[in-house]
Amino acid sequence: MRFFAILKIAARALRRNKMRTLLTMLGIIIGVGAVIAMVAIGNGAKARIEAQIASLGQNVIMIMSGNVSRGGFRMAFGSPGTLKVEDYDAIRREVEGVAGISPELRTSAQIIAGNQNHFPAIRGVGEDYVQIRSWDFASGQNFSDADVRNANKVALIGQTASDILFGEGSDPVGQVIRIKGAPFTVVGLLKRKGMSMSGTDEDDAVFLPYTSAMKRLTGDTSFRSFNVQAESPSLVPEVQSQITDLLRQRHRIGPGREDDFIVRTQQEITDASTETAKTMTLLLGSIAGGSLLVGGIGIMNIMLVSVTERTREIGVRMAVGARSWDILWQFLIEAVALSLVGGLIGIGLGVGSAKIVSTKLGWTTVVSPESILIAFFFSAIIGIFFGFYPARKASQLDPIDALRYE
Image (cartoon, one colour):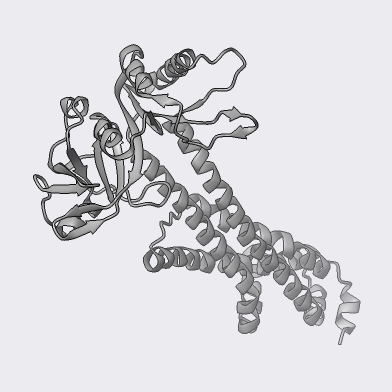
């Protein structure tokens, strides 16, 4: 019997029981749709993390204070106490290939502007900070090296903090804000940056020369972190190595002893952060893939029922010349057709669900062609795998026994 004739017979059999056919496909539809939607959500999380890390700037190396054991106690990531002003000056002076460097200390305090007050993040930074972060200005300009050296009372302000203190759309440049009673003149308004990796609003912040912040606000003598920018991507490993060697020498850390600082490149931060997103994507995809397996079992179950119901039909076909191979192909094609049609509908469901999640919940979702192809491929494999046993059982029926079946 020709292939197209077998295909026609299989299609007729599926149309004969439309409701059962639809319910059989439902498991595959839900499974494929869930896989695509869950992978899209996981990929969206990964893409968002990568975008947030990219917002740190280009060729960035981060130096964090801490990570040292003292008396059995391990200091927290980014703990203050080990990075000094002298370390900052030494890196600027001695490390080759550095395009910019800025210390960073963080605090929070009430800021007053006119009759408005707000509690944004306050960061003490160097004049290279906005260059390292690739942060453009909406108006005004950066504070200068002289402002840092002289601990001048000047400030840069983010969009969110500006909108709250001065009103949405206002230009705060030239305005005065008061922090702990000290007047600071706003010299620059930064363009909107968005959310940070930790989920905080990067634009709800005020940036001061680190000398002003240390002298007038915190009284600190050490830094939480340094941000370093290498001159080119190829120089990042060399600059990282030089910084590590220099700080170990300055901190008198002997061979075999643990560093009291952490040096991480932007790529290392990206790899560590996206690894979690990859694991989440794999987990979500695996859970959703379980429903594909359930759908495959449903196909096998229905096909076995179908073989039992159509035993007499199979006997008649064999009696008029159909071979076992023809019967095998007929039932296998039915199973694969159920799986493939369900897979196509599931692809539409998955892509639509991902768009709905993105639109309604505001989550970033990324539907990759690979996830669609893999889901469709597995739906075909499931049809073949779970359809083969019922098809083989049908093909091995004895024609005489089949004709006698009631």
